[in-house]
Image 1 (cartoon, rainbow over the protein chains, first blue to last red):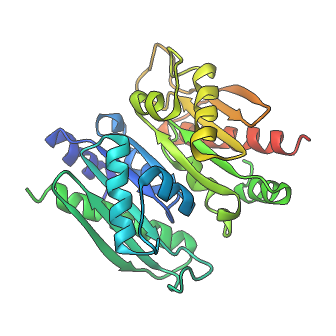
Image 2 (cartoon, chains in turn yellow, orange):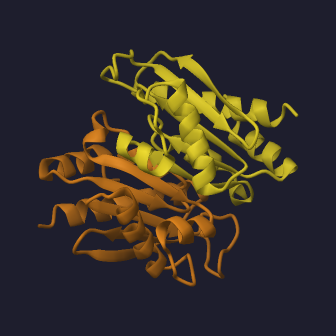
Image 3 (cartoon, helix red, strand yellow):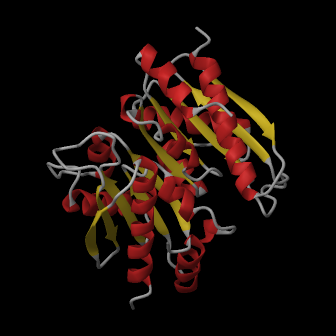
Length: 151
Length: 151
């Protein structure tokens, strides 16, 4: 998994700030982005939009399905606006144990938004609830690091 | 440490919802509140207000010092209003490695707000950054469970 310290270093070197919006990961992604000593140099904050209502009201999500790439992108864009950050990364999906919106456990979408980028990646993860949450965080960090270091 | 599943069960039994506002714990508290399968029955969401600016803008914090009981209570009250939950719990303090506002590493305040309660508890924690973050989460869960089961 991408070391959160590498993400922090890549952002710091470029003078960029980051925030996040999380559904199934429930705060774990923010915990990773804030784990590195000095994290406040890049990490501004996050929204854990666990309920659909919070996704819609705070992050302006309009996607009909919350387990979708469209929702992931809207969550990231909403967090970027709300937190006033350069980059925002998001997670939505099915941690289990039950299906959601007819999608199988392990279906995850991670999203990313900056001033000139909006994209998502779909992950199909195996394992129990903890493994799926961790895998979703890893996917979000991978996507963020790849995009930040692309330029 | 209080098992998050016990907190979830106590809230569910009483038909209560919960949210959180976090500074030094950076998302770990939300991750605990969302860890239990079926967490969406009680956990609505959280705000990781890592920067002072996010504390002030999203949570209406006016306290001059962010490492304070006053700030912890204002964060909880702000999260309760923003997330529209019955109870909100908060954390603020110094995870280290550096002092903050002249307060030593390990100084932590956890806060709690409901429609008729607002209180905070001060913790003086030992250990490294990870231990202090975990200790702050434990303190927040302890406070929440004690207050929810008091009635």
